[in-house]
Length: 278
Image 1: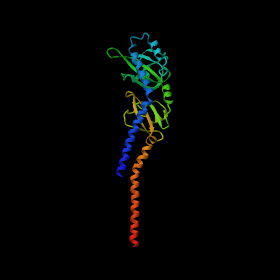
Image 2: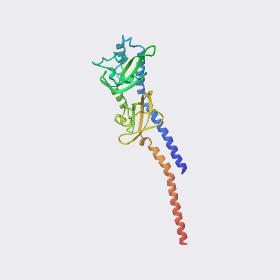
Image 3: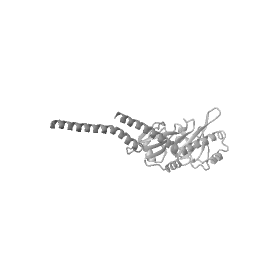
């Protein structure tokens, strides 16, 4: 009996580790294209910091416009000085545009490296966007301005939604600091599951949807500690075979003890009956 109980615990630990590794592997494999999206944005903005500055915006607009050719996911590239004044933009700004009122501008004031924020309505492009930002600096390291590149929220959502995942599986790109869902193959379900910071670690994490169904998920970093990729699966599907086998491991010794007790009771009853008969 003790051996069967030990086997049950060992099976659960083994299947738990296997499920964790499988979810993490699915998250990383599914996210390879999305990793390229953010790394491409960072590469482009990094290259621009060496060609455009607050004191050198001569060919800025033509350069930014040329960069955007054949990149439908990026809606614009703009360059601002430290006061939020638009120095250059591939797309002409609307009347009265003020970057300082945008969420990405406020977030960028405390970010000294590449970052992605959103979603929010981008007034510069008149669409829902996620905004990639990167500060520019001079030779002394002092900030001279900031580059902003809005990424189409619709484009990203469509890219994720076309992936064929099972009904009990979910893939999402999440702001790991707030839990805000940036894109998911099942947006409504993802909003139910993720409502707080996502801890990017090896351990499986759990969340409950609006119907009370438990989901297990693994998260991997997509953009340092700012954006995470998450792959989730319903626990009843993920551990279905585990529950069955572990239950069997625990029930087997109990059933053996029950059958043994019945056999002892029947044997004892027969023996007593014989004594009475004699």
